[in-house]
Length: 237
Ligand code: 4GM
Image 1 (tube, protein in one colour):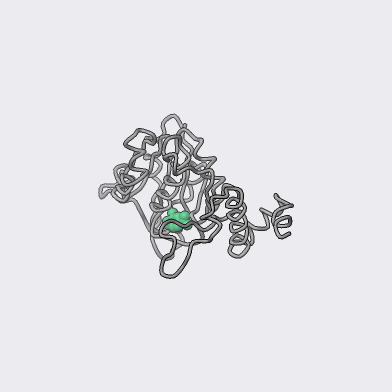
Image 2 (cartoon, protein in one colour):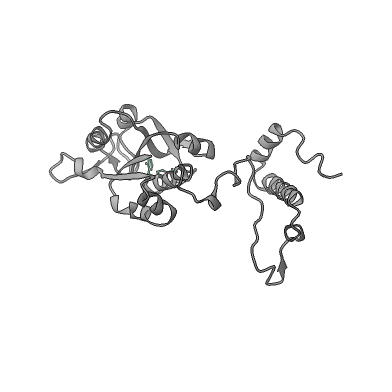
């Protein structure tokens, strides 16, 4: 997959050379190209922002450099163009899986109070948010999206890091995990996990997932129950 990013802080993206994403880049599984919006500014001082029409606090990113950057980045208009903004649809695992199927993504990072609305109208396919909070820029959300999507690209995760048994794959939160030692600071690993009865372990994990989801995410629990009407009922005989 090819991912192009437009930002005024290109140096922030050096973090993508680390860990699993860094390994995937080196192996040629994801091709990430960072573009500096400032390089496209026609202004003599390379300005990228201006005061908002109508007044008010803060600055707004001016349309010219962003529009010219996107024209250059995606000449044949083959990328899915995404603007990271608190006004977007909140990212979920289903959206991550859908975006992972694209050949090319273009991620636009805004700063300040946002960008001129006409850029969204002219140049953007989809607005996505990482949650109901505001950051100084869209760079960390863009990197979060890159990370989430990359995990679904063939070869990025090793066989022991697969996506099919994790949180959300069955619509539930993950069950508790334990490793050695068997006792730590007086706390023991649940007996069922030590027995080697795989059916029993599977049942215990599902039961734990359901209980944790019911406690912490009643919204996800209700959805799970509506799709799995028999869940929980047959267990407590
Ligand atoms: C305000 C308007 C994305 C601020 C547009 C970007 C949070 C998110 C910004 C913007 C951001 C998010 C920049 N803050 N929740 N800051 O995904 O692009």
